Length: 476
Ligand SMILES: [Cu+2]
Image (cartoon, rainbow, N blue to C red; front, side):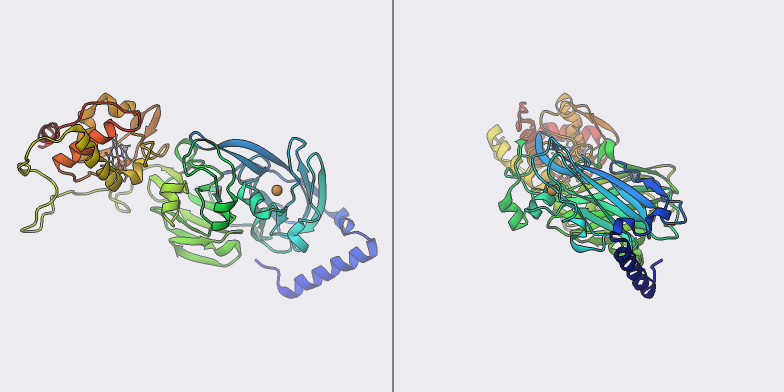
């Protein structure tokens, strides 16, 4: 798929020659090329594959926009972007194309910006040539010498801050023969964000230079915000289809361990180049780098897309979803086949199926709250979050949760037996699995008391006797 080296050398020498005789590269033989305007679409979608068999002159028009939008519930951030989305538009061209790039800086913006495309062979990747003040437009041209999936980003000082605010995207230079056909293509780009307030702290959050220097992000996200690819905004596919993910990492600092839970990448174009590795679980995507992953989806379900540096996924936002619809194939994946009691001889489990140990007397509500909080931070908080707000589309909120507060025994039963199947909590639909919590009656009562009296919830204490009653009513 690569032009061989001799060819490439010859090629650049011809361009240099033409530039000399014509006195300007923009006239370097492009008269003979057909001219077309690049199709740009917002992430996570990508423009259609290129069907042309010959090079063209492709005109790309991108407008820089500074705007404020939601990073997560109740948290706003002022993004700087290419095209008004983070990441910026996916640009799709073919090896050998001549690109005429127009960078427009919206008159409403505060700052100058530029673009460094890693697909460019030339100083700064176009940065100096594209430096543009608000209300101006710059033009430069480049020949796409190498195929591959490349990052582009702003490179205006302070560079780190421009990237940290969301100024990055991907440009695909298709090989001359094109990429193999697949059923679905999506565009996923990771970025780390640094805010003065901690994760989830409400309000408009300014950029934190200090945390950026320390490489201590509050948010690590796909496509610019927590949940940008989750719930209703998840990627979709059907059983039997092939999926290609164009994956990029804008950084500015972190390297991504890109993984799709429950899938194996059949093929990975490592670092976005032409080397293909097969049967990959997790692929590294460097800051300012990319990868293309391809896989066939064989069974239905929700496949969670993560940075497998896993605290980033469950605590900082690097979590997306691929929802696959279609018929089950129990030979590929059975689902749970059995759940038996496992009790090695002579050991006592935490499950109080028999009489609870003798107690000296009932605890006060305050004591229950204290013990319940400990259990919560040990057993529940990873999913339902420290503030009880859950994660939209994945883990339902417990704070002011209508579903929970409307039926306490159902919630107790869920702690004992686990929760699954769809539930609607505060208007959001959840259809995931919560494993049984394996807590004894006291611990269940305490944690229930804690969640029913925290984060704005108010309720009576739940007694161990009530838990025991639910347990025996549910036991068959
Ligand atoms: Cu910029």
